[in-house]
Image 1: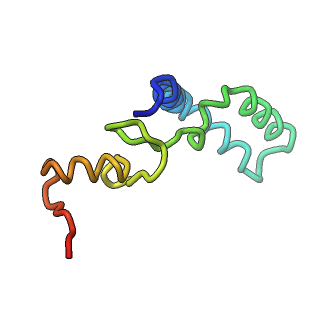
Image 2 (image 1 turned 90 degrees about the vertical axis):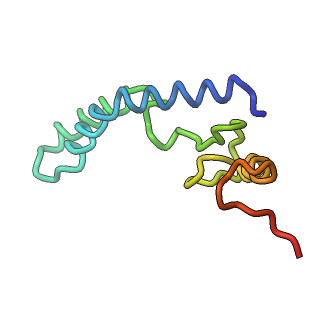
Length: 101
């Protein structure tokens, strides 16, 4: 099980990303628009830099929803390989059969 503080910190980041998503997209559109004057684009860049760092989408860490483990994460299942194996061995994942030969 991962530290509760790490999981909570990640949830806080998810909330901030959702809160600032529209504002960030708007500022990025201004920055990328080559037709706008350079001063306006620079002001938009400064405003973007003034937003909280944790409101950037790439600061979110994919974590297992069962254990909170940050590594060996399967996106499709939203869980780590360790949790998947445990649930699979208990017969809780439909269609998953333990391999043996």
